[in-house]
Image 1 (cartoon, rainbow, N blue to C red):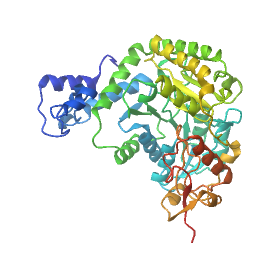
Image 2: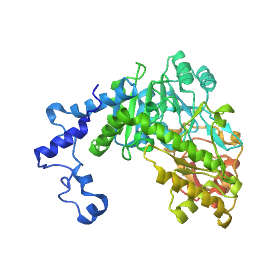
Image 3: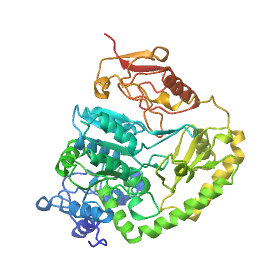
Length: 487
């Protein structure tokens, strides 16, 4: 296919050349009605490019024709049979993917280290989750993707499961054995969905971990805004084989997705695909070299422990995305959250993630010598200034087994049940009616339907005292909890 073509961007060029005057949405009418004070900050071109796909970039006789061409080019670029764009982010796309495989009351295997958007999909779809627990790394307090044998055991115990959802890479860059899990799933005649939100760059360089479509996955969801070059909320479904119906996927996306899709998202997806096909290998090659320099330099700084290939050598993960710079800061006597807050407040360096133990920085094709120096200077300053960071109460991290809570009710039933709000001191033994997710990375410590324990309560309460954010709880202070009412 001709990857110099960018159908959506070309349609915008043609729209502007024609000089169309629009008498429908959006109401700002390509910037004519925008407040100049807003345009001064955001830029007028954002509004000039905000055009409806229907009766704008395309017409009613060729509805979706422009978009369809762009999606065919995307599929060809990454080796998928079909690709579909989504403008609501992968948080919605993963729900759509789940609904395309398992319906209400049906079982779906899920990695328990899933993002809250996956748990939300379980609630919305009424799916019965079969949790496949991740491989816990006790020393690092980190969860890595489950292995093929874990999936096999779960499918043997639940032969009526409709498929598996695997999250890889994780927020911290550790990767699962996609091909191994896919082959186990296919042996049982069910599809593998891969939530590869952090992997949009993977198809374009052989030095990166395996890409889901190349590793025999059936349906892969990517967030192109995370490690790619499209704007926020840019997401793509990639599909191959015949285990997931394209028709069902489109129907479920129509059920959940917006009817006012952003042309800005479509355009940036289209342009990113062209650039990756034409220049992606060289751009990512430079990024990989840059990331390795940063990792080696950080290793020489006192108190910093960058994570690297040892995670694979120790058998904890199948692979590691080297563009994720993940650094344990505990030897500095502070938490990752404290480190991230200090770097932002003192040096105006905003990191990609942090938790009780570590910080992370994503290196992409967009980084250059200036940003590389800025990050290394900031890390060096952190090691020199950590003593000035005020101590906070420690977070009581539980043993990995304590995070595997009993599922006493289906998540949907618990979420919509009649509820009580009880003091935290009285919550142990009760069934949760809400998600409680330390954020980032946003993996629920408690999901609806799970039995609350003292160990997890201690973890969450001590986390709040330390400064952990828990934005999805009914009471973010975790002073009270939302639980299923007793009758």
